[in-house]
Image 1 (cartoon, rainbow, N blue to C red):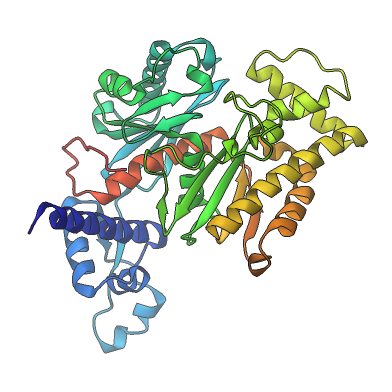
Image 2: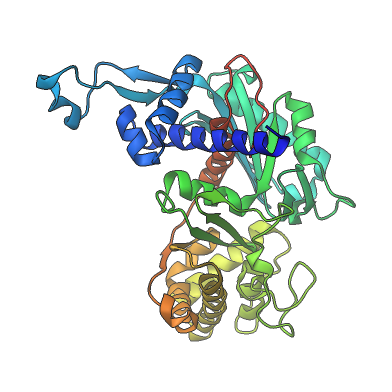
Length: 418
């Protein structure tokens, strides 16, 4: 067997293992036969994977519980026992870096949160080394709060906004690290400090994983998440897998162009979706209508946007028009996604959902008007707010996604295949 065939075989095994373990997580308690039905894998494949997972202590038989279907068979033989995940087989940490705070969550193998920690800090003022130090201290504190030790942590995942190469563990640009002169190897910096494998990811991909594991993306193999807040982000699931692009930095929906002569975006180009819809774009247009105090940092921007939202909700027609215009551009961009990708669902999330009632009508109208007729009404549009703590839980899911794919021992460190 040549190297390519070997690699393909290993990939298939990893994917099959992931689907079996994820199915047990989602539907436990569950029988072997039901795992096979839900994964559409052969009985032999399912049996081999489950045997390995049992040997590793990742799952166990709950011999004291049977499903309704198996109970009805009790008179015709021994009822089938059910499988459960061992949630304490491994622990991971997820963190989300935003401009004004760091959120950290420790979870078990089932992604149940064991401890959460929020550090209010203006991260964009710190620089890479201090951010890595802050993350180290925060992660160690959260792990202690969870009642476990760093020796029990199998991996760490961190999300942040910007152009993130998750494979290389490098931030090529982020508003949080904008002052850094060169790409920042943040994953290696964290791994060196903590002695644990670390991965970094674009934060929009984290909320996409959170939707897949806990939210509206469960059971949907093709869906899009659009995040609306300080910037505009996007995560994409295609055929059941998170899509990152050839260079690991795809799905930059916020920097797709609507009008090349449009307003200046933070990326330095003109007419991006973000330049029309992000918080700073809302404030730019709102200042033409009402007086607002200076906004030189993330908390002041947040406060100003909340004030503009309140005034619009109370009847300021000019400000309502600002949100209508932003929603129309956002909907136009989403219609382009619908036409290109044909997702089953588009989930809109992020801090911008504070104004969901002001944005939603024009978003839905623009999607309906600009989608291909053959796709009109066939893509569900969902508005769903998440807190930063849930985004951090998505970062933990990033690590778990890698753990689920690989055979491992609780006594070994895990190199995560993301």
